[in-house]
Image (cartoon, rainbow over all chains, first blue to last red; front, side, top):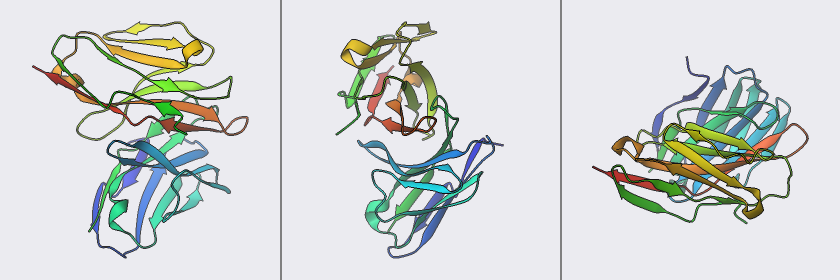
Length: 112
Length: 117
């Protein structure tokens, strides 16, 4: 099994729908992250969590929310999806000290 | 302000040519880490190399090498004798502290490398 698992891998949804992207990790790390990738913009940080009780906004959090259900689980929600949220989404976890990051395989989301 | 700048948007080379990817970063921290990742057409992120801010020794690992210079805040990456399988998007990234043990990773915009046979 992968260290970081993202579900679904691909999703097409309609404008206005609520959608949740899920992420689970088996690394035993406290720190988890959600990134969004758009062509030509690299990966941008949406939300991050340094432990179960800690949630922080990243640089592009508008239109998104997160839930840290357990150390191993960190979900990203789009309450009302819009077409410009079409992107590739990555979840990651890291060890303490910022030395090693492990990424999931990504979720390709299309909002039509 | 962009913390990591990759000035080259696209690079196209013929197989066996060397490719150097530029990366300039910005940080006030004294302890930080720099990374290079590869994203092939399949989409996953593949970790390539990592350097900490206290180690400016440049190294070679197979066909990969890097040049870390704190004085110019640069962390350049070279692929020697490129191959078609090297075609991918390459990201430079900076890991900085938010608190004593908590870090977050900032990415550059990426450089698309195309290696032609």
